Image 1 (cartoon, helix red, strand yellow):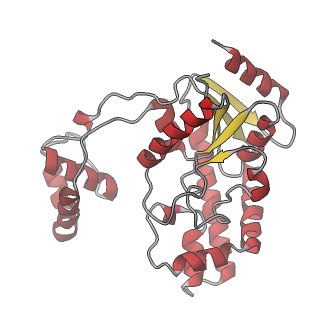
Image 2 (spheres, helix red, strand yellow; image 1 turned 90 degrees about the vertical axis):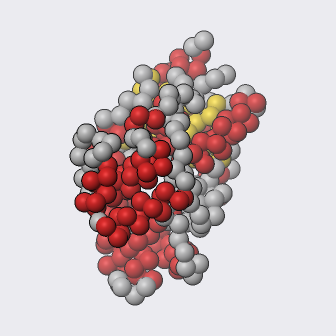
Length: 303
């Protein structure tokens, strides 16, 4: 059965709880679609499923990556094999998470384009540091009609490196996209923004009580933290506490504040997304909406 379910939405909306309720009604296996929950080191701070939750339904791609760079391309390569394994058992793959780019890349596909070598990435970075952003923009003006603002450093550097190596723009080299999970049913789980904020604050305190600070201390002892892992909510603030730049109360306050800011952006972003023509929007509390299972059943039974 070539069917795919996505349970998505902002942080603290109840995605995992929804998936666990769904598992009581449909034979599913859960695939992680959260870019931080892949990491081994941050079980508490990333709010990975507990040992008890892992027993409810089979889980895949949680906590399997050590402290290293991990991109959407790595994830998709692993997902393809996991999908095959799940479908061989005649079960339904259910993606659970809130990393929009991961989900979008599966449903819409990724453009294939020529890679950028280390040599030209380094050359672009050196030009930026030695000559400044204006010099880099002058080079790009030979290729681009629109202005690329210097404040968007990453976009500027990636495009500069590509132009230097391939003597052309990235946009002229985008390949066609091939969906990996076509005709997916996307279930957007949400709650009122106020409820999300309250849950985020409660969860942050719970994570501290469970040992999140000790988890971060252990990570800090490794000295080098991957750029991808560093994006974990609460990690920069708790690292500042470990480095004695913030008190624990200040770190908690800022961690909660920045998590709420992220939720606000997520809330807006998910409200404007329609990756698939098949979308359900669920305001999930503790009772499982009967109409959602009816719609899911219709989708699964369609030929």
